[in-house]
Length: 195
Image 1 (cartoon, rainbow, N blue to C red):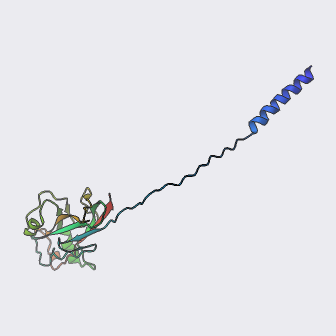
Image 2 (spheres, rainbow, N blue to C red; image 1 turned 90 degrees about the vertical axis):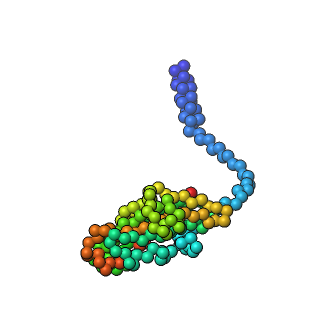
Image 3 (tube, one colour; image 1 turned 180 degrees about the vertical axis):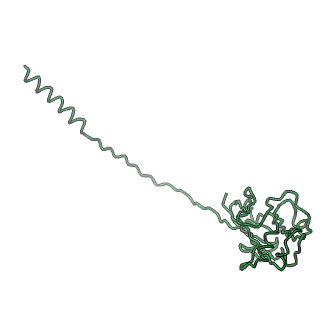
C-alpha cells in the first residue's frame, strides 16, 4: 500500500506543478472611431511701442537721454501689447544701459544711472515727467532686472489688449566726473508666455 500511496502523492505534486505552470493569455480588444474635433492653441504675439506704433523689436526713441546731466532724468511711456489671440503673462527679463562697444565713460554713466519702471501713471502723466509712486522695478539696468511678478495681458476680441509702462532713466546727482561724455543705449528685454 505504501507504493500506491507514493505514486498518488507524486501524481498530485506533478498535477499541482503542471497546473501552476500554465499561463493565461487574455486579449482584450475593442475599436471605436471618435471625433476629437479641432484643437487650436491660438497665437502668442507681444509687441512694444509708443501707443501708436508697435513691433516685436521696438526702437524706444521716445526715451532720449542724449542730453542727460547728473541729477536729471528722461521719462517716456512704453506700451506693451498682446497682439495675439491667447492670454499671456510677460515680464522684464533683463536690461542694459551700455552701448555695443562701451568706453570707460559709458560704463561710469551706466553705473551712475537708475532705471525705474512702473504702471501707476497714464501715458500723458508719464510724458509730463510726474514721479512714480509705486514702481515695479527700480535699480540698475542689469541682467537681473525684473518686474517681480509677471504682468497679465488678456486676449481681447480684437487681439489688442495693452498696458502702459512708464520708463524713467535718471543720472545720480553725484555721478563721477569719469562719466562725463558717456553714452547710454537702454535695452529692455521682455518675455511673454501663454497663460
